[in-house]
Amino acid sequence: MEVEFITSSPDLAGRPDRILPEFAFIGRSNCGKSSLINHFLDRNKVAHTSGKPGKTRLLNYFLVEDKFYLVDLPGYGFAKVSKKKRAAWMTLFRRYLLAGDRPLAIFHLLDIRHQPTREDLEVSSWVRESGHPFALAVTKIDKIGTNSRSGRFQEIIKALGVPSDTPFFTTSAVRGTGRQEMLGWVEDLLAANDGQG
Image 1 (cartoon, helix red, strand yellow):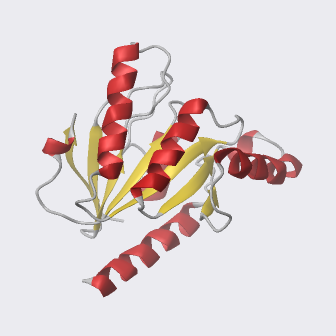
Image 2 (image 1 turned 180 degrees about the vertical axis):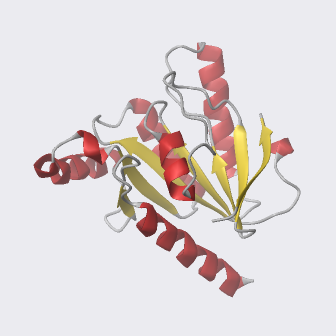
């Protein structure tokens, strides 16, 4: 897979001039977003992973196969930043999701080990409000036993209140699961976008 880093921007004004479909990865700090992005792109260190959550502070744009942008958004809910910074990030998310001037789809990431937080629910509502296609990507499924997973999936879906037909991907960067299913969803949306053009 051909991947090229394009730009990082603290706001919408710094987005690439070239307009292509965008697939945004959004999730709570420490949910495994960087690891999943690297797994999705089949790269080791495209997105920076760290033992310290909250490293992503900007909109990071990667051009994939000269077809679409993968957009790595800041992780939200990070406790060790100021309330002012957290509020600024949430405002950025909302503006990005509701801008409506570019083709966009969203992967909303949630750690299987934790119940959705208030901020997860808030972001989920913004994603639905935007009207863009979205999918749930549950991360770190290797961290709990196989017998417990189905129940956790249902708990997450119920807590978020998303439609029953919402695409739902179970992923583990460690075990290498979920990538092909996510890529299939991306390819289907790209094909549909081409059909509209």
